[in-house]
Amino acid sequence: MIITKRTLSRRAALRCAGATVALPLLDAMIPALSAQRSSDALKKKRLSIVYCPNGMAMDYWLPKSPGPELEMTPILEPLAQYKDYLTLMTGLNQLAANPLPGEGVGDHARAGAVFLTGVHPKKTAGTDIRAAISMDQIAAGEFKRETQLGSLEVGLDSTELAGACDGDYSCAYVNTISWRTPTTPMPMETNPRVVFETLFGEGSTTDPKARAERLEEDRSILDGLAAEANRLKASLAPGDSAKLAEYLDAIRDVERRIQLAEAQGNRELPVVERPAGIPPTFEAHAKLMFDLQALAFQADLTRVTTFMIGREVSNRAYPEIGVVEPHHPLSHHQDDAERIAKLSKINNYHTQMFAHYLERLRSTQDADGSLLDHTMILYGAGISNSNSHIHTNLPILLAGGGLGVHKGGRHLNYREETPLTNLYLTLLNRLGIAAEKLGDSTGRFAELAV
Image 1 (cartoon, rainbow, N blue to C red):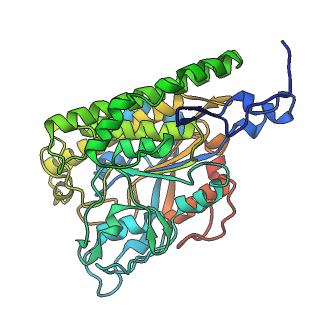
Image 2 (spheres, rainbow, N blue to C red):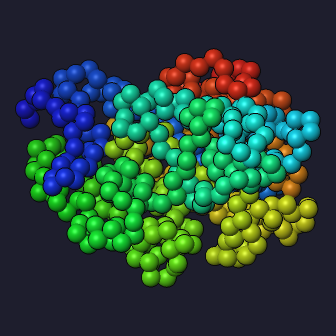
Image 3 (cartoon, rainbow, N blue to C red):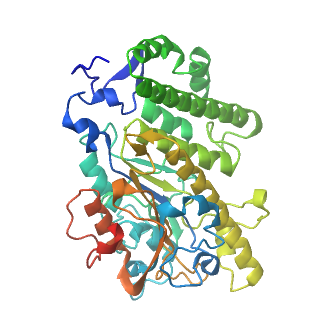
């Protein structure tokens, strides 16, 4: 074999007829004789946040034993095959979500606003909202120097609500958990077509008729790039060639599912109720959005994603799993065993979707491991006991390898006065981001890398 120092540009892309597709990180992008070839040059640390609304059925989430072995409880059971990548963390709190004297109701809004910031939000139903820069955006500020997008924010529930959504708190506090500045919340995109175009090329309009015409003219953004892709593959080593083929197949599959969703949406649902591009079922929508995040990581378009499985006070029902009651009212179960059991079915259903994400990451090669090996993922909620809106002993789960900084298979039980922001400060430091303070943080967790 002849080894040369010729490499592909890290920014190399496939281009044809105005269409552009970013390439995944290939071995050919690192100089062949460079010492970096076998080092961390091919490994990129990534951060993914997955948020669950309306608290948790804690009796089904918490293990019977305080640890240290991770117990796969009923809600966590769908994640059993990823146990070695998981760490359950109990005892963490976000006391900044508690009401100040005279504030009264609004725990859902405060839960969302505090979750990644650790700062009590300003109570207002107007435009003068205020929280703090969120942990994901601190990471995005560092990583954006090397990626096309600083971060990607996606969700499944409509964020078109305006005014007050929880007490006298603005809907902005429940529509997102990500804040670029104390007064600038990051919107959660719910339409997979918009996310796809953000990653791989935008259309000129969101008008449904124009969109349909564009789809008719170009059924797949890959069609006009096939010849160029084949030429590139011919010059790559077998490993890179296989990686490129896998990546292009994944893009084609995601776009096919989006087009199918649009066709179904246009045929079966009023546009006012479900915008084109959003699949008609929760499961299809959730899996598609998880796949788009995985694609964004695979192409190194971003290294930070934030995903809201639902917004706070979400009233989504789940008849597909036998739960016809809206989520939020059901979460106020009044300690009724039957209602708690139904809430646990929703929570379990969410972890089933999360398992799909973990499998997608685990099955995607990245450097000398997988995307799951090189990603740190936080899964959790800003409320524990949903019936009483408690912000202590939160349901928090870490997943992924984080480039070796995270050892799984454990249950770490902390004293209840421990701030959740201590975890965030630790994760930022593990990601190579210098941070001394975040919200109400008081320190770091040295044991996370043990």
